[in-house]
Length: 322
Image 1 (cartoon, rainbow, N blue to C red):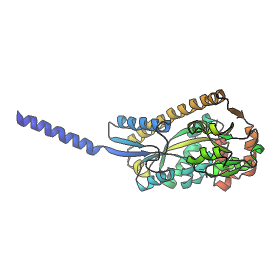
Image 2: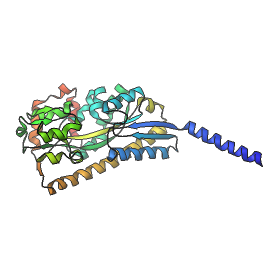
Image 3: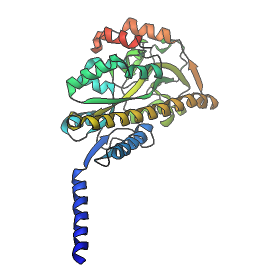
Image 4: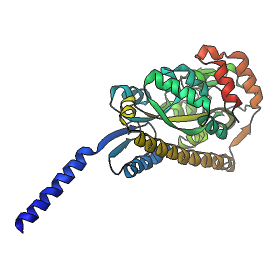
């Protein structure tokens, strides 16, 4: 009897060891805070992939730049230090310039247009170009928010930004609209933007409403101007090494779950933005609509797509999506 008990215990230990050996541990990294949907839905996706693969994959999610800044984690896909990341198309464009066309000002009408793009043949073609150039695979796209402007002077049309001292990230597509309107742009570090606005080093900045609220920029700005110049998004990217090792069945599981997570996060962001417009107004902050057609006309007149490495055909194809 003791022998049978010992044999059973040994079998259990061996089974556990084999299961542990069969489990693949992966690293999923991003730069966003734990309170943001880009993190909460990544955690959900990691757990869901674990469930749907019957525990064969254990995915640890590293938020808030724990594994490095955005440039670092993109590099980590090549180095094998990370397996999955969430990152913007401006970084994907460093590997394959044409995919950056989706950051060009006013290319998307609204979030619904962005989501329609992600289901289009245009997206498939651009994503395939990125995959061929980098080896990495874009599994899903999440709506990040529509970039708006805050300022200490009222702005109704493009010309009102002439000479405006404005903080803008050092990303060519982000710089296009402010520069076309005559603003004096400066790439102040994100962590220093609040203080720079407060002490007058700059008079304006641009970010989605959710960021404007989270970083409390509205406390040191008189006007929120709904320029809506970029409908921003993030890609969920799987490394070449991991994607090449997944079976077709597992590729489907990873893709299905990551796209579900992207849809969940997109819905949260859209709902938050709608509420924030009313919330800012209720706090007595001037929230102003602008003539977007005027801004767009200036961008198209003063900015050449070719200077960014974008193709006019891609731009036209994206714009035509219904």
